[in-house]
Image 1 (tube, rainbow, N blue to C red):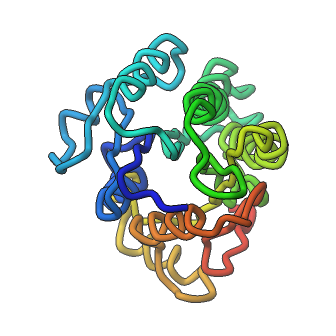
Image 2: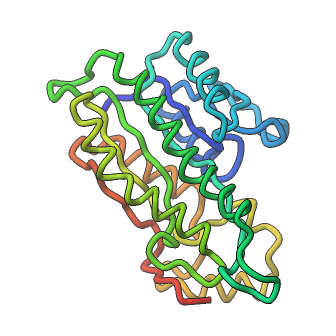
Image 3: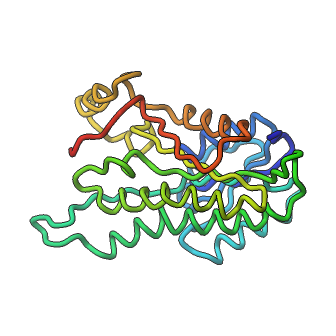
Length: 253
C-alpha cells in the first residue's frame, strides 16, 4: 500500500514504540496523529508532521474527539497503530492476598479495551475512504501484543491476559473488517529497549540479553517500527500475529 500523503494514528505515540513508529511513518511521507496522555506529550520531541493529541484510550469520548480531529485533516486516514499499553505486575495469590481486581481491570482496560476502541473508531473512518488499489484495500490496523500472550511469566496475569486478548482479537478483526478493505495484524514484541527498561541494573540487563537466542540483545524500538512498515507494505499479510523476539521463549520467571 502506498502511504505517501496519507494519515496515521499512533497511540502511545509520544514515547517508546509509538514514537519510533511515528518517526518511521513521517519518513515515508505520512501525516501522523500521535495519541497520548498529557504528561507524555509534554516530554515528547517535536517532530515535523507529527501532531500530538491528548487522548485517553480508556475514554470513548476522548478517542472520538481525537478521531474527529483526524477526520478534519487534509490527509485521508489509512493507518492505525496501537502502541499504548501498561504492565503492572501482580500474582494471582501472593503474601498480600489475592490479586487486586481494580489493578487487573486497569491493565485490561488500557491494553485490550483501549486497543479495541481505537481500532473500531479508527476503522470506521478508514472505511469511508476510497480504495487505494484494485483489491479494494482502504487501510490497515496494527495492534501490539507481547510474547507474554503466549508465555506469560509469574506476576504477569493481568498483562498476559490483556495481550492474549489482543492476539485472539486479530483474526476476528481481520475477518470483520475484510468487507471494508481493512487489514488487521498484530506485533508481539519480546524484550524491547523502551523507557520502561531505563531503570534496570546492568546485571539484570545482561541476564535479559543472555536469554535471547539471537541476536543476544534487547530489541530496539526502530526495529518494531521497521516491522510496522513491512506489514503495511505487504498487502497479503492479514490476520497474523508476528513475533519479534529473537527466538526468545519466556521462562516462568
